Image: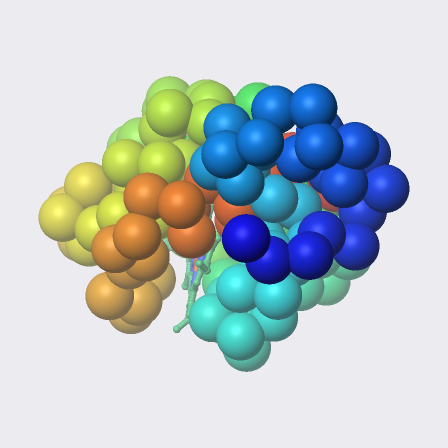
Length: 124
Ligand code: HEC
C-alpha cells in the first residue's frame, strides 16, 4: 500500500485497511487533473481556456459558464453534473454527449475518474 500524505487518510488506512486504499483520493485526483485536464481547463472562476472553467462544476447544470461558447451538443445536455453524470462523461466524453467539442479520449480507469471527481468536488 502506498503511504498517504493526507493525515485523515493515514488514519483511515490504519482503521480500515484495504478499504481506504480504494476510496477516492483528492490528492491523486489533483495530480491526474494537472496531467490530463489542465491544458484545456482552468479551475479559476471566470478563466476559460479551450474548455470552460471547472470551478465548482460538481452539481452545476451543464453548459452554464457565462462567456463560454459551448457546442450545441453540450447546450442540449441539460443534466446537472452530478458525480454519476461526470463519471459517465469522463469515461467517454464524445460517446456520452454526442457532438461535444471536448477532444479527449476519456479516463478509462474507474479509480482515476473517482479521484478526479473527488478533486473537482473539493473546488468550491
Ligand atoms: C483537449 C482539451 C480538453 C481536455 C484534455 C479536457 N477537456 Fe473537458 N472540455 C473541453 C471542451 C472544449 C469542453 C466544452 C465542450 C462543448 O461545449 O462541447 C469541455 C467540457 C467539459 C465539461 C463540461 C463543463 C460544463 O460547464 O458543462 C467537464 C465537466 C469537463 N470538460 C471535464 C474535464 C475533465 C475532468 C478533464 C480531464 C480528465 C477534461 N475535461 C479534459 C476540452 C477538454
